[in-house]
Image (cartoon, rainbow over all chains, first blue to last red; front, side, top):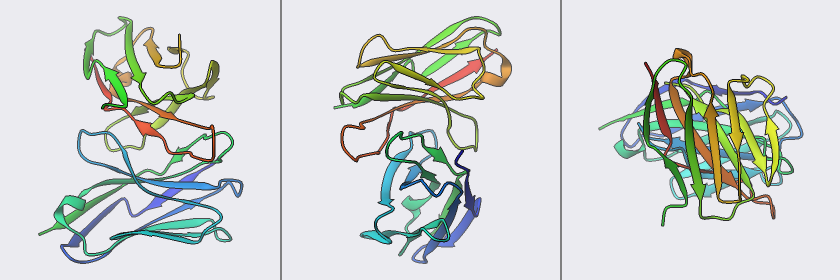
Length: 112
Length: 114
């Protein structure tokens, strides 16, 4: 089955700096890669996703890159703000069964 | 305009006393999931329904059961809760009608086992 590894487990940056979180996956058949943000005590919420037919996707300060050959994908947050502080989870799944596997999560702290 | 609703938000039960958690959705999605999330860990999939087709994860204990009486509702039954079952339980939905895979999560039910 699919195995998703996520690094780092914790990340602390200064407000305005960039943050990068990296994930690798094991199943080459996976073709959908979402990123979820979970604030303390709240539900995970999708912030961006990417499918295997594209290499990069951007939405304002957030971007995701995908390298299918190397089986890794990354989340990039630019101009970080204190409200970006949360736990971020990457995930991987196959579109035909939506059996989603999560990474272990990265706790991002943005210091004002 | 809540899309995935979970009740109750907080549940306290005693060791060994059965408990049922509820999830409902207004999205008319055909897939519903139950996840267990322990503190500082990723959500762990317990099982999911594709319409009425039940799919159990291989490592989900028999203590956990689920029912989906209709499209809108799904229940998680914990037959004999142990201290290790204390966690946040998240329900999620998705539609496989097209190519969309996004899962929509409910707010979760935090289960405490005394």
